[in-house]
Image: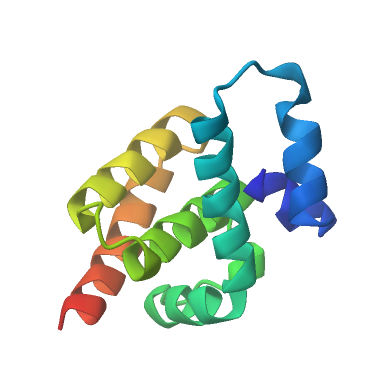
Length: 122
């Protein structure tokens, strides 16, 4: 959903409604996924500024769309989800990058998220 929002800039509720039409997910899954996306979009300027600060020599618009949105989602979780340990968030982002992005993406994402994690904990 976040990938689609990044490409189209359509309303998040519209994207979520369309996204889950073909899936038989239980309501808690739909609510959680929708919350993650809507919170990321709501705070995208703050999140992007933090990512940009740690992405040396990389502009957000030059990053792969998958990488950019994994970084956004993980950074949102760092800031707004106090329950999930930051190391778990990083590991999940790396695993998704391994599956859906380039060979270099896991290391790229790990480096940026580790820097953001250290800043937020410091």
